Length: 79
Image (cartoon, rainbow, N blue to C red; front, side):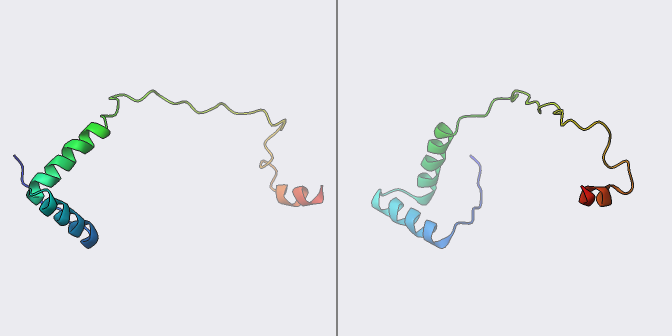
């Protein structure tokens, strides 16, 4: 068994302490049970996620690189 140290917000600590007292169990037992529950709810992720591919470039109808001309900003505003 491993021993850990955890920081909890005050409100969460109070609620956990209340639940442990109402159920007549230690805080450690309550946290162990909570951990067991979480491991059943959050199943392990697949080892290898399917590779996602980005879509290819779209044809925007541009015949040449618009930024090749050093005066592209000026020409953009003159249209």
